[in-house]
Length: 399
Ligand code: NDP
Image (cartoon, rainbow, N blue to C red; front, top):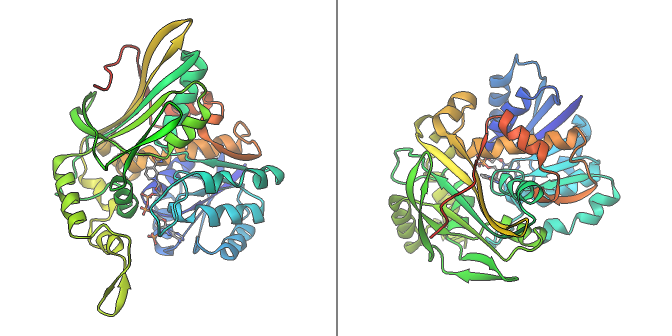
């Protein structure tokens, strides 16, 4: 008997709510709270009659007292933060004050600096520990499943992991010349930043999109992919003993990149406020307002995602290479939960992580990245709740 509060009512929250209702042995009650009450009510209407009572609420997740009051009123056992990374710290503060477990899918980023790092959230370790509360950071796909894959590889397949390449391929086509698959502001901030990878104890910086490789993805085909910095590099570099190199690659099509270049050249991706008709606006937020809402891409996106990790290391004194990945079909995801695969691959692991806290397996006072916890039940959950994994014992390597 457990109640979860989902904060946010966007693409990822929609999937997580569907999956909580599907896993009703664990989630016996839900509260969906977000900035726009109508979106929470719409989601509740879609899920009504499935045996899990749902309440909804309007909340400003930047406002700690408002959050605390809502948590005290609703009394959830866990808060699933599926709003934006800007809200991570206020929601963690509210969880501490109201005495409830916390989970998110993306690490904190200050709204005005476009720099995501774990240091702000890792700093909560003692406070969560002292209160006997669990905070799970980054329980989406990447970060999230990629960390669980790493913990699983280390537990069952390797004595030592030396290199990890995380490959994130979205072979989906939504038919627009330019749109982003999740929150455009977060997405564009991520891809216009400098690249970075971890090697021999330090991070090496690259220009944005400087390193390009081609890889042939099962279910998708050969795609160009680019080295990006991604938040799990920071936590995996810290938590995987013996690691010497970690890189993250994401695929982008030519149309996406040429539009992005153009938008950057004209200043539309900037987060510096400008004065427009007597009012301050942030160009990137204005751009977000004119781009298609990622939630509207679901019905029109076809194709698959293929996301996973290639590990290199040692087993029984011998060199070993091992790959594990998931393929998710945009249309199948849409038919099942009304969201495309990028939201699906994030919302399912958020539900699994929360369920493991609620059933006690991942309940451990403190602040944890997923690779620090036992991966086995999470891996079972992936197979059970729609993200089955595939193992390739002799993969092609990144050229
Ligand atoms: P959306 O923009 O679709 O949804 C965000 C939701 O949060 C919206 O419902 C929005 O409200 C709500 N919200 C925003 N600000 C506030 C606030 N101050 N108070 C209350 N509610 C607020 O984003 P996604 O669903 O695509 O992404 C959700 C999260 O998942 C993000 O943090 C994203 O970075 C992360 N993510 C993680 C991935 C992973 O693999 N780990 C992959 C993809 C996303 P409104 O409806 O009013 O706009």
